[in-house]
Length: 343
Image (tube, rainbow, N blue to C red):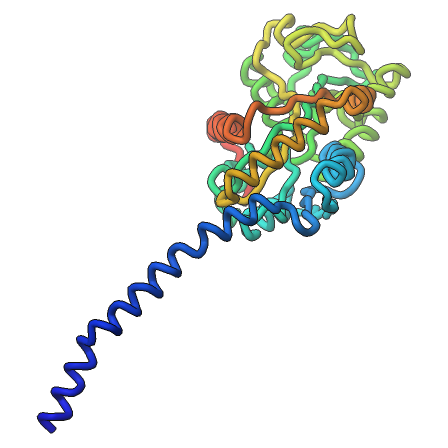
């Protein structure tokens, strides 16, 4: 028994075995480095999936379908649009955040999904977009307007405020749902103006909001110009304010929110491209360069401008990531101040 125990002790402290273990351990640590470098150099070597948080037809889907074939031309692999609607965009958000961080699953998101949902859905989301996703680049911006039903007497923000004070409890407004930025923007305006209004949410977004506004079912709303410009031009809706810093060329006679005494209220919706947080920087940089090259083409700018989308690419992935995180923090204060919570 003594010889057996001694033999076991010798094997336990065998220096050659220790060396072999160390070599294997060091090798395991080093292997991911060349693999990551190779994936960045050869990226993409297979199709890339673009997750869209909404059904086809909306602004986020439209910009994704415009850039996907151009990215394929630039990078040599298909960029496949994959619509994942539901849960106010959270289904696509969570799928993107939990995907392998290799650049083959990306998300086309916007201010609602990637900057606001983190606060409004804080108790139900399984992820945190500001932590679990990183930006690649902003893509476009879409101006917003305050529109009113033609049957609604006021023709300006001041007249709307005066009307609401003379008719307490009668003003109502549409939004794309509880906690969306059209609702949050209106809450900010109501608070600043010292008036109240009834919120009428439409989960189908502009597709349901427009008929309600056209029929007079609701009186006013913050809504994107791309969805409403034809109705405004035809006189079926009236624009009473715009949210851009200066007046829009499409609506030169409509004053801005700032001109009407409410600077900083109103959101111009951006669309952007995102990746899982641990995606290697060389892949992010390669995607950013491709996006900038595609959206800088004059024909792309002109085509998007016809749909009232302004190209607004970021200087770098880090700049866009920092912007979205700052907006996430700012929106969290709006959500908290207005006690907006979704269970």
